[in-house]
Length: 110
Image (cartoon, rainbow, N blue to C red; front, top):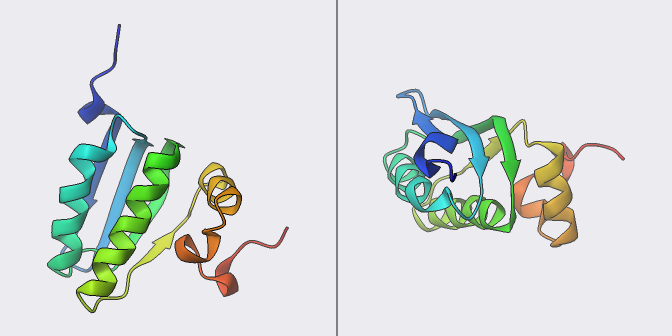
C-alpha cells in the first residue's frame, strides 16, 4: 500500500520571512513542494527555511533545495536553510554541493 505523497511532506511559510519544511523530501513529494516554496520565496515569505522537521531525503529533495536557492538568486533574494539534517548534508557532501545548501562558515565541523 503506497502512502499519500501530500501527507508525507508539508511546507508552511509565515509572513515574517521564515518557513518550515516537514516530512520526507523525496522524488514522491517534491512535485507539490516546488511551487509552494517557489511562491513563498518570490513573495518574500521564505528567506529562511527550517528543515528540522525533515524526516528523510533523497537526491530529488536535494535538487529541490538547490532549485529554491537558484530561484531566490534570480529574484534577488537571499535564502538560507536552517537545521539541515545530517542525512541531507551527507548527500550534499557526496554530490559536492554542500556549500550550496549550507555556507562553509555554518557547516558543522567533522
